[in-house]
Length: 189
Picture (cartoon, helix red, strand yellow):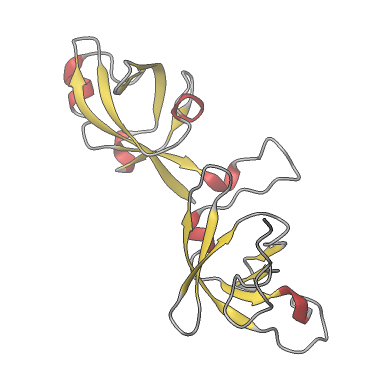
């Protein structure tokens, strides 16, 4: 799937540099010099990054295909894309999930034997409606059948399995996280 990592803004100076509206948390990695990026609209690319810099407030880039200000200005409004399907993670054990891959999945309870063949239907906890970024870890937002939104820590101990093909995410919640499931843990003084 193609995702937008930046949108080209106005030309800057005379040597073909443009200002970028960044849409990624890793501009240095995604837009490193030498990177070839598909574009939207497709007829404006692909573009090869020749220079990337950050002035403390904004990002600027230059492309081999736009050597001067006139060519750079013609790229204004072009989206720079990255193909997430062809990327390989740095750590084979660690999977990365994007918001669009998680939203709409059905959250099921792990203790029912969810995902195991020949078991009874799993208890449905709700539907994944969002992925919130956090400092320590991200959180899946699950809307229960009653309409309540629960923020579930997106860690392997609580979310042990995601099966995009089956359309499910298995959740093993601690007591009290979901209404009516277990008792909340005691607060120790």
